[in-house]
Image (cartoon, rainbow, N blue to C red):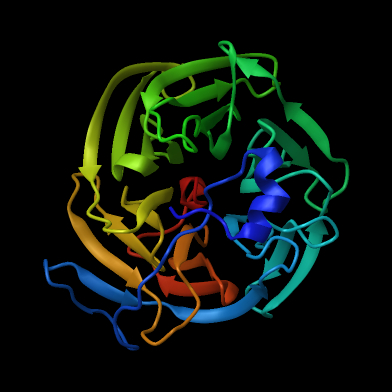
Length: 342
């Protein structure tokens, strides 16, 4: 990823949020699925609506999330939104409307997930090493977790919940200096205990359970790879029994961002530096590439995706100098809890 524009650096350098934007390319033509060069399909996403514009205070906008609430509302965060601008938004994808849910003067939120335990919305504050939670209407903000884990503060990026409501967090330590200090951290659902499950990772970013909660898919941004952590105790056991590199992503100037998983076990890998999503099966075969239409200017990242629970309509967050947008496409499998990009 390239560094932020000077105004964004000025606004966020003190918070440590220094590498959040990428350079993009324009690819494909409008229309339906076509064959890619390696046999994978190309799926053309359609623009749903614009959610944000470049913020004068930070010089950019960067959408993340997205996560479906059980009532159907789609929640999206804007990582670089300044105080007074919506940092958490709720989108009605049918009516194509958006409303502000939360803002504050401190947080730089890089993901959003709903807990199956208490129903609250959990946000990772990358800049301050905290996890905060809100009521679904944006009220009652609480600091759920802060402080060091095994002697080091986290840079929490994404969250995956197990079936009991415990949190599995991608800790992107080492990103700014290019060091492999990334971790996967498990936080008990009451916030009382945090445990490092894996370390020495290359800027851990996306994280999602597989379709059976038997293991975690994690993306390592600075090595452009997806690793698989097999878990003991049925996911809630808090123990990694094996770990291996599962997929090497040929991203060029783009890097691996967030991950979602559908009911069939397919992985949807977001890209930072190209407005596209790569789709793989659990054996590592690339099935499809989701692209925005050609000649779309000012968009250079498709960081994350959420698939409608029980359906196949998928929504991806796309950002760049041209603003922050929501695009839609038909996923290969149905949405589940793991289909809210982690």
